[in-house]
Length: 118
Image (cartoon, rainbow, N blue to C red):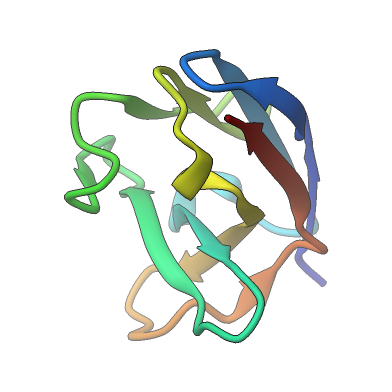
């Protein structure tokens, strides 16, 4: 069974940086596309960044130029480096995994809170 465990959230001031990490276990990591989503109260979960098993990346417009997603297939981890943080980046951030050939992200972590103070 795939398990995802996020870490690295916290409180940071506007303009600061945070690095989120997600540890993957339970299957062959290199077969999965990985992503970070975020959610605020009363809103649906939104995709922030995605990285395929071959290393191709894509970002939400709100994340482009500030966030970087990366993966380490040897360590079964995916990270999200967040710079120039803004109060509107405040959310619970979720790591997600989509197995090769699937159309949806079927595995989710428990989430980690990111709070950006103004």
